[in-house]
Length: 274
Image 1: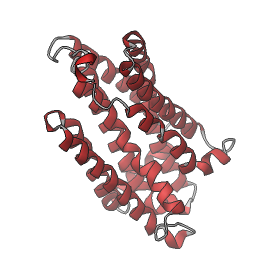
Image 2: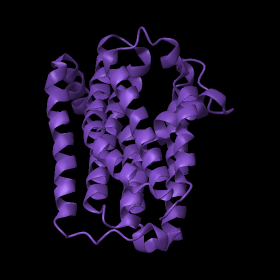
Image 3: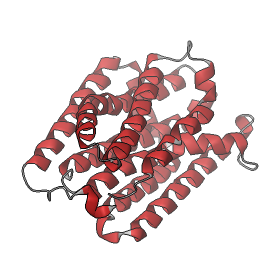
């Protein structure tokens, strides 16, 4: 199995997220439903991938399969949660939030990219579940998209030159975003070079990360997109959430069926790759 200690590194995302989202945790009662749903299922996603990695490396294949089935429940809501965040960013602009007014439309575009890229990666992981190398890598790269939301916030809080103390420092949010993306890309490149034969997931996530950085710069002040983005704030939440929920379920099911059909290679024995 590749990355036999990956679960320990995955779990590091939890304390990092506590630091990055300390303001959210300090005001849980005031945060909206959208943030709660996204935070809960993003946490469950991290825990699921860590448990999947640990279970297969400890040869608990029955537990690994059971956890995999749990993904059919967790993933659709996790995926739909991106669209709740998308709409909540638009609502922040409508409510007059000075921060969201500047970069909210850009955040909206990178949220959409995250959602669609995550759906593709999860589908690929299910489609290739009989190929341990691709299956593990496709699941792992879904976590690279946490870079901007977790690492970017930490950089803005603790790193000199990137500290954000007021609206005059708002450009530093962009700078921290790009730095966090570059670090994630550097890791993806290093992992790709470790085994290029199974490097497709790292190529894909690198493209997604670059697209996010470009989108933040290009769409934060693109008037047609800003107008459309703000219009979505007035939509009933169910109009975004329910179709996204069904789409997430369809991604899960179609990936599972594709992997079952025999188009993917058989699962290698974990003992062969220790």
